[in-house]
Amino acid sequence: MSLKIIVLAKQVPDTRNVGPDAMTPEGTVNRAVLPAVFNPEDLNALEQALRLKDANPGSTITMITMGLPKAAEVLKEGIFRGADKGVLLTDRVLGGADTLATSYTLAQGIRKLGDFDIILCGRQAIDGDTAQVGPQVAEKLGLTQITYTEEILECTKEKIVARRHIDGGVETVEGPMPIVVTVNGSAAPCRSRNAKRVMKYKKAATTLEIAAASEEVQAFYAQRPYLQLTVWNAADLEADPAQIGKTGSPTNVKSVKNIVFKAKENKSLTGSDADIEELIVELIQNNTIG
Ligand SMILES: Cc1cc2nc3c(=O)[nH]c(=O)nc-3n(C[C@H](O)[C@H](O)[C@H](O)COP(=O)(O)OP(=O)(O)OC[C@H]3O[C@@H](n4cnc5c(N)ncnc54)[C@H](O)[C@@H]3O)c2cc1C
Image (cartoon, rainbow, N blue to C red; front, side, top):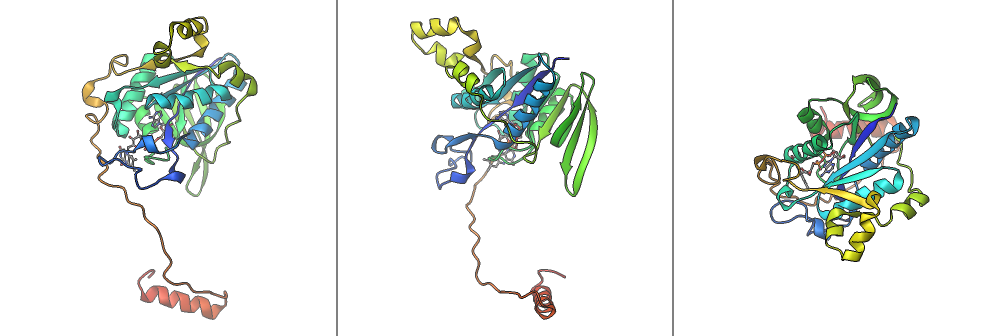
């Protein structure tokens, strides 16, 4: 059995390096000033995809990302780790998308790709932090979804069995294929780059980059189609202009503030009954509990 697997991966600003100019005055992320990384949970999703591919020879993994042309870096990274193909959805009119417009655009990309068995994505992106895109993609494509997945235990052409990590425990669920699966950060970490694949694909480039290059470079890529990363714009996606980018986004982020927690005072407790009783009384008196 071979599977057609899609992995959705987002290039995100590294939120460990957020400075004062991290947001634009319009409330969108100022991606130009922040170092960009592969969204961590998308790497967990990629690992689940790679395990399915290992267990089912002949399977293919296609990665899709929506973002600036630079977002193609996550496609290359995924290919270095074992994915087969990459598709970049990019267009000025896709900019400023909220989760509704993002999931619509990704769903259009998936529709254009056509045949697939399973769509894997991270549970949540570390910039928007909403965890809405996976479920919305499933909804738009009319597919069943399994969220908070930690491990895919079984997968056939008909059904999938997965273990979910939920508040207070784990649960094992079953769903019909094709399906959307969102993967948690507690799932297995992604394997490292494969040195042979890095050598083979290090010159992988988007069709946008290739079109802008010299005739000599274009000839080089024409002979090596496996190095070409597909690029689709809004027209290629046959996207409804009212549902993409800022126009298709009912959400507006008004402002983002840095909050620094400062301790005004501290108290050392010995763990004795008297200390604990004193603490409880204090917490009740200042209405923290009770
Ligand atoms: C501070 C801040 C607050 C925001 N608040 C909201 C809000 O309240 N409501 C709202 O609708 N939007 C909000 N946004 C916008 C939101 O970040 C974008 O819509 C974003 O494109 C998708 O949402 P997310 O990052 O929350 O993704 P999530 O839903 O957290 O992402 C889940 C998974 O979907 C996949 N995925 C998500 N985006 C892409 C992509 N571009 N390409 C490929 N795969 C992808 C990845 O696998 C990812 O792990 C906010 C943005 C910021 C910066």
